[in-house]
Image 1: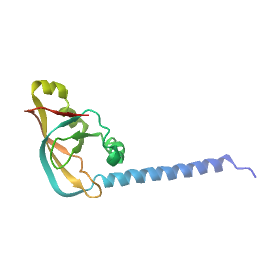
Image 2: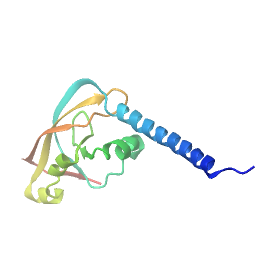
Image 3: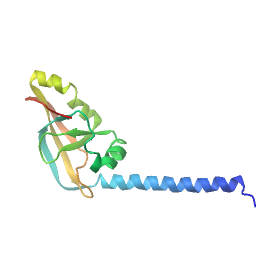
Image 4: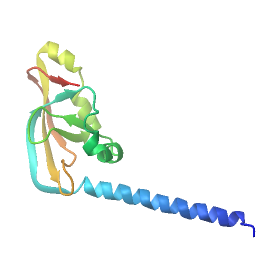
Length: 146
């Protein structure tokens, strides 16, 4: 008994449809997990911590970092103090904090301070993407970490 090319093609189409459905459900699950807020609004002012190499957070947030935030062009902004260690913010706003090298800021005796607004997540650790309300230079020494 011979198998026709039509039967082979329909088998591949079914497998591709199943894989596509699994992929879409994964993205939907991750989107819900990392977007639904819970609790009061957190509004805080903190200085930026200049993390030169961003590889230390992969254990807890790789799905969020590589799947969700990169799709919507958000980037991680590390903070010196406050209720959270880092926030996700729109890439264009994060770029405003890096307009000048932190070493150049160090030579000038100033650093960057941000005021942000975010909320805790209902189904995960961390916070919703932050809105940077104010970005300004202030006197001080920038904290530069690897």
